[in-house]
Length: 425
Image 1 (cartoon, rainbow, N blue to C red):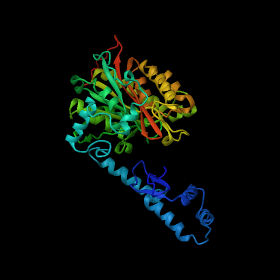
Image 2 (tube, helix red, strand yellow):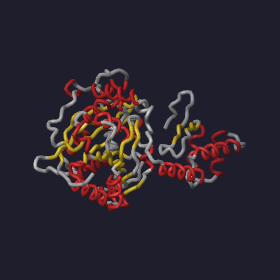
Image 3 (cartoon, one colour):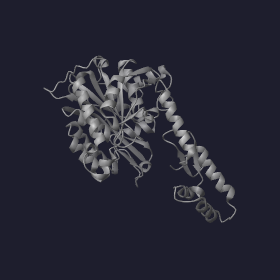
Image 4 (cartoon, rainbow, N blue to C red):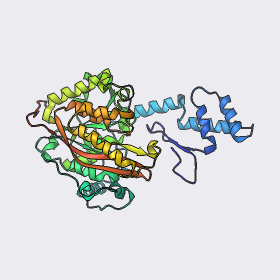
């Protein structure tokens, strides 16, 4: 991405997988040289490019420095990177606990400060100060900003909440997690969360408990192992993406605040359904996806009310940060049309119309860039008898030129379709 530091212009490079911790800024004059690192060019090609750019035939030192810097940072696909990757994967596999990756950045690191922050978010007592919270409500009427209460709670089986920063999405987190009740604590919380960097058509599992500042969250390894055995080709076991992905972690701090630290989860990272999105057809036309959806549906049939579903999902990603040719402002201009399209998708989700929802996602290969589309579709195929309700919808300026949309939602059983389940805990 462009360098965020005005005093250091150029191209900012980092590794989203965290195989490498290095962060580099490539000076503007050298940016085009990166095209030589494509596996098809030689060092002679790089040298020729440097001579052309600098007008100086003596570029040997610049060439060596560029190659060595990228190599030592782990940004070349070579033995250095392979060793970094293998070591990080080995370290995560050996860890007994999935440590918090975003404490101290996305939310407070100290337990009491975190509890206080969530209490303020959940009660709405912090006030809307600052650019982030103000722009979340820009362009909305008072009635649109008001969070709806769910019509009925007795048959509640799941919620959908954002995974955006709580500083920007706290009102939608509040809308979703406020519907939980003490009796829900005894269930296993199946968290279907976006995998931003996971392999397409795969689902990431881990047996590790998750640690947050409020304590450790138990992982229902019995169910993890059952899914892995039923759909092994679809599962990435001890998926390294779990080590840094925020989409499960942010659900846990709100879940623990609502029901106490000692909850039990089944965390599932849902990779993108890229084959269906770009080639057409249904996601389950891929054998791996089909096997996992069938296994998850069978798990729900068997466990019934022993399970509670949480979707950690955001919706549209629009504007300069997301490679659009316009600056996005929440609820204004282009974003008003995005909001209308979001609402059509939400209507299909509320109706549990999986095919109707996916038809809308496939339009223009999902130009709205819903990162939560695969978790939503997975849930709709797993719980086709559920009905959803929109509690709150928001758009938030994540920066001055880019917007993310998200919502708080609740899912309940249709009357006459109660499932009680018989799985032992």
